[in-house]
Length: 435
Image (cartoon, rainbow, N blue to C red):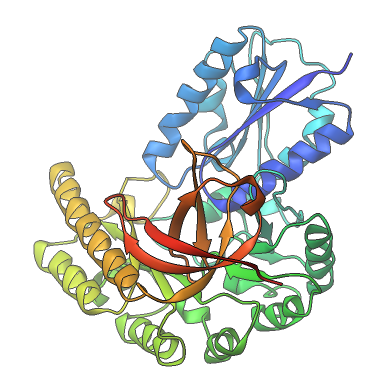
């Protein structure tokens, strides 16, 4: 009788792509994939370590898994597993901890799923993690997260990702195209490209991200190609110009900023200053006025004074962007920032975070309001939420309509008619499925 396995993923789109691929791998080995609540024989928890809060969630998910099946074999993988394997191994109920390289061979460690007295740790040195493992998510959403790059060589002062995922390395264009063709053949209409530093694609192969986009544009049947995130110094004019004239690459960029203060950016060891960031936004908007631009920003970084924060706030306020992802700085072991003076009090970090969340809401509402009365194609999601379904326009406006199973995974033209109190656009559906 085959053993059942359930998964839980914390963190980014990259983690989702890897969890999905590991899930298919274990299914091919004879495991039966089930829902988390089903009391699986084996639980695989894919962890994140971008923030301190993500670390804390790991123990909670382990407890939840054991509540569904007290005898379940629990395996922990992901960034937290690479960074703090011994700490995870001490969590009651954990049986196996796998590092960055070992997680892709998880089937080899699940031949015996009897619970252990002491958790087994399998983690190599991160400097020795040089192999690239292709991954993509499928079956979870109407969009697919396709991993094209892993690792990072930037070593920003606040970030542990290079310590958790190793050096920057990439897939090949030929292999990414092959995977995209498989994804499209399964009925998926939108592919989201993901990686740790996506724009660094090809740094170790002699190829580059622009060439990858050009090749993926030609994949027959692919309706939408979305870039999950790209560093401003890697977002070139030719990439922006390609997106502007493309019928496949959607008008949506998520561009990490982290601070609107050049002094703080230098301390963070970022690869740009605000002048370059501004030029990227202006270039996008000059060619695609309707383009959605998302921004990552960190508040409470060591040494961030009230003047630095107001500099960031005012910079973002005047910038033609669409929404913010706000991260409250958290101390990370083995990072340069953790050793810096000028710690910002937690309540000050919280206040600054709240201010930027309010600003983000204002930016999103303004962006949505600009498109009321206009028609855009929407890809409808599968979820039925109290007879309401949601979808996203090509330029990332979230819309809703009455649930209709016929709409699921279809791209349809809608007219944006308004914005509700939850910051979701209302719409009028034009009953013509796009080709």
